[in-house]
Length: 303
Picture (spheres, helix red, strand yellow):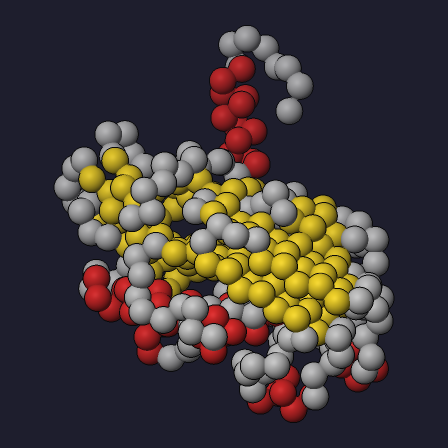
């Protein structure tokens, strides 16, 4: 599924493919969670990065995959990773304790030893209370902090699956959770996304570059058009990756929110009452100004 989130890094995408290899995610399910933590103590051969055959058993030296709300943890002398997933909340943490052992791979910001953590939840929603078309507001408050050394990478993605074909949508979600690509996954649309990295000096990145020690994340906000009474899926993914002494701690993030029109009732298969959507910072500021306008002004953050 991580291939469908972002394409900025070659090695962070492999973790959730292990769920398919290990048989932990198979049949379509309307609501589920998945957490993966893995550490590798050396670089992979360059051809594995190039050909995509990194999605095989043995990719990590230590790996743990958890369904439900349990914490997935992996650690060696060269790195550590943790991930935990609840409906509406993703948590990840990854740290590297060793330099990259391959100079050529290091130039592309990949190479090992490395640590990866991925947190995923998927849920099916239906909005009741009226007929026709409506708009939902969604948000993700993504937060964390990079370590004081380069080599940390983090991303968030919220995907929507809503083709109008219930069986096809269920199969799409299952395929994404198995990290497959192809026609079964084309209906997934990214609604909210973020990728940030602390690259080594002199090395470029396709993600948003940040300085060592910088804060990770920000409030992401967007809208979803829905049809009353028609189910749709949301898939929330938070990932952290670290090599070359880098690290990212985002174990109190990301927090999802959703808000419907007045009178609408949002029902999820997980049976969760999700928090209200949080406006993006600029929107929140304007709302604050509006609320305080009559009373006077009082005092009011990148894969």
